[in-house]
Image 1 (tube, rainbow, N blue to C red):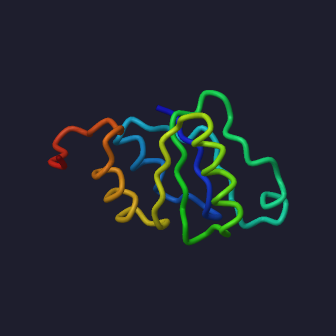
Image 2: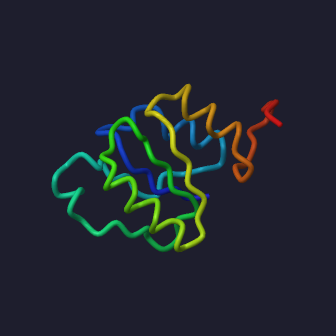
Length: 105
């Protein structure tokens, strides 16, 4: 599964966590850079999910990407930019691939 990740200046160890769930980062858009705020907010072909880090995004950028994902029928995962928040969001979603030993229902 490939993800478009929007928000955060750096991803840090988030790609490793996503790999545990069978998700790879297809593209990362900062969302805070003025050029990113004016850029086309389309979801690239081949993306399977949109991940939004809400604490690093403006409302207009978030809405633009969310609307583009919904038009394409992609699931949208919104959470804060932290491993704990992302893990919690992934464990409650219905579409992600569960890692071995995941006890989330």
